Length: 593
Image (cartoon, rainbow, N blue to C red; front, side):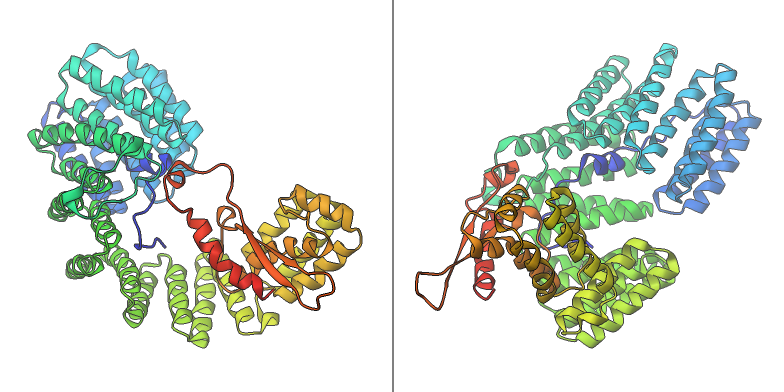
């Protein structure tokens, strides 16, 4: 579940590749009444796919493909098959899709159909991306580009689409610079060929890539009168993205392609918001949302809605975000769009949480759980959200009931990831209530503690780190468990233990007492984990120590707060490292250890 409490990090290259301009061919209508009817039906299929109606898209595209075949239109049949691939990929039939593509490719190559081969290779690259196979996607996309290069000059559009496939694959492999280079080549080729469609697509792709280059373009200006004061390479990337996006927008408007117009408007909104122009950014996102509503394009509506909500919540305007969410919820319900209703309810749960309206957040999360059950879509995720809210409201019995329901729902649907999350939550809850023996992960946690102890005794650094990571993923143990299992292993050979602890990242230079307490820097953060707080490596910065003065019966405590030498660029620009701010509070817990 994504929190709306702050502007999220810029999408990863792989995520940006998935939201980049569609690779479905837009091709020019071809001759003959049968081909014309097939083209109309193919457009219906594409609109259905864009609205999340995969079954309808599959049916319409299959019928269109048959009509293209009857009209002896090989290019049209290949385009229709490309849409079929996209629809089946969206349904999760990835392996079946790849097998079907391989068979169809053999047919194209045996008949020396370079056009069909290019279209299919481009579609296959998209299927590999959907299957989480970026390296294969790049290999196939490069084959598509090679096949397109052998086409006659009249097929510039296909060459540009193949280049877009290569750029998308580069993005998914984290090769942003290479992706941008290919996009710029596509722009130059489109300009030379005076191909407005290709130019608009290439410019849009370039804008998406440029936006993805900023790993975290934070919203740092909330007053539009001061907008433009942001700097650095991320801001430069956003401004360059705007330049490409505005040119693409004008072309899509001229070509009367409303869906693409809305998509570019949303990218303009993100770039504007990143630069601090919140009002202008929200205005662009609202225009995009209006167009997507008009077109009945659910996925686009959700993306534009998310952009608006993030802009408002990140600029401390949660009430405005709630107004937009309520309007969208009403429209989703009146239109019978349950998938969109679920997405909006999730957002509203987070917004209510930001506003401190715990009861409203809880009731909204319960509504989301009911809708997800009807849709058979991530019911366990919603129930776990209810469990979290119940726990935060001080109702542990209700939280336990919701978590147990989440485990049952996850098992019914085979959702192993959600089951693991719910079991970890329930284990945390039992430990918190002083009933660790009832934790579902209790046995595994004790096994992991034994592995941790064995790793200390055997001086096995990798095994130590693996066991620690496993413990953090499981919960179901107490601080007493940690002490009971680990202290004997440390006491057997303190000198050797000191060297080992240095190896795994603990500073044990302060003597025997410091050895135990410095190791239990791990105990400190394992203790946080046991009560529901999990800190990543860059936020585990508190190194507690005990100092006992000669002859004293009591001890003093101190903590060293130490950041990593290597930091991400955005952290280097901050006045205070966020992990240091958190760790200042962790020292209070260290005093009681």
